[in-house]
Length: 187
Ligand SMILES: [Fe+2]
Image (cartoon, rainbow, N blue to C red; front, side, top):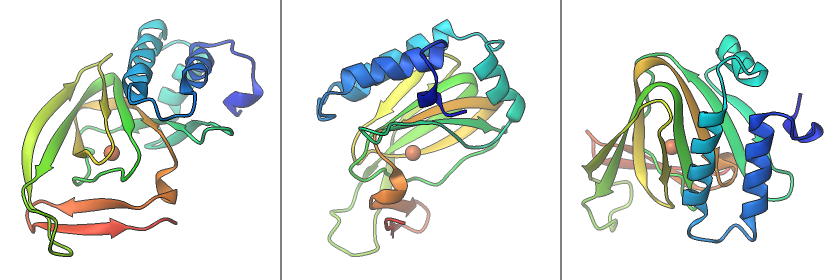
């Protein structure tokens, strides 16, 4: 059942209502950090036995859209990641993202580009930081931040808040070993 059709009668709906109330025009540079704090509160106030969370865990789907905002376009995703699930370095183009671990441990590596971006298709990366997302830990990644994720202790229950639908924007995927960059165009 779509969340927006219900009244705010569980912790997920309360969290969504808080994000909506804080959104404004969506351009506040503090917004990713505000959403991160709200997600931390959501995790702290949600029991694995709460029906909506229990269903998400029981379902075990690698990716589920939990909420899509009809006015602002932000999306809350819920993921159940098996141990070892990971992805290649990527950015989210003009969007920002908040990753949170409810269960399991997910490592997120953040990279910086070491080339000047002048050669098309070429990008060299250097590891900048490793974030270990233990249960209850939430971390925003801002516009253009290059990162990759790895579920080191699973199954991981991972929440991913997207400031906008990533399928509708241009973003990049990187191959660190080959030193290449691939543009992903809107679908
Ligand atoms: Fe990402």
